[in-house]
Amino acid sequence: MNADASGSPPSRGKSVLFCPECRFESALSDGWLIVSDGDERTVVCPKCGHVADNRTERSAPTPQHAD
Image (cartoon, rainbow, N blue to C red; front, side):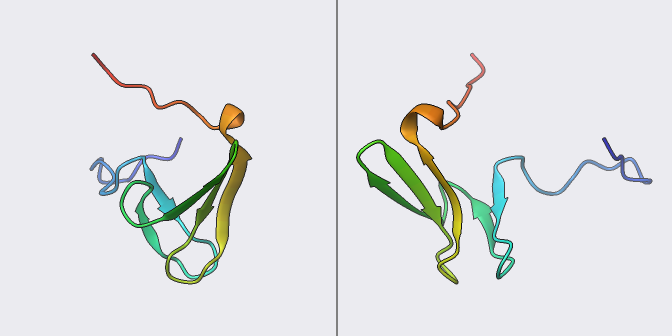
């Protein structure tokens, strides 16, 4: 783990996704196009159309919520 020399926390949340093609960044729930077809889920960049993730629903991580 790399720490910032100033000791300040990162300015972005952990749920921010980045497009490697056009550098678009946003939370998964705020801007990315999510296409579901049966048990398959594809995450597509809304800016350039790059497929950022493609997996079956069974292999998709389940969000963990603190009580």
